Image 1 (cartoon, rainbow, N blue to C red):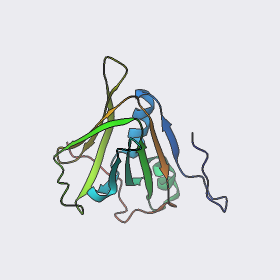
Image 2 (tube, one colour):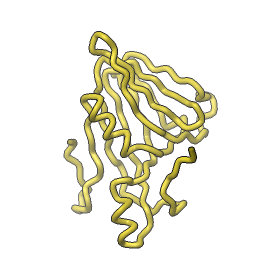
Image 3 (tube, rainbow, N blue to C red):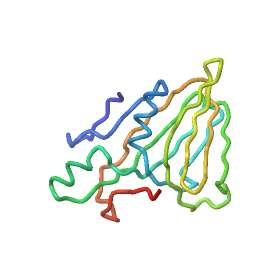
Length: 158
């Protein structure tokens, strides 16, 4: 866990570290239905890091918001993957930087030699695949929570 809190002592923001596939599953559940624009994704080949700035629904606060009768919340969150060797995407136009994407899940496909692939599955058949040396991810809220404009819980139609 990353040590993070706001200066005025307000509730500490979410801060998680994923070092294996199980940790990544927990992180995926909390980031499900986060939205971002294509321009909110960056790969730094020199640092071997891939980062995303997400607008995530605060799933961990949903029940408390319902009990208190208050608005659901969203928050901006930085998700960074380290030890990234290569990045590939499909179903995403890199030219249309303002396209809004919705993150459905983050998964890990293990390779035979300890390496593997982190797969970010996006609504509309989009996908970002990161070839990684190991699972090395951090997620950290970077703003205070705010009322979700839709006032609704994200739902999946199936």
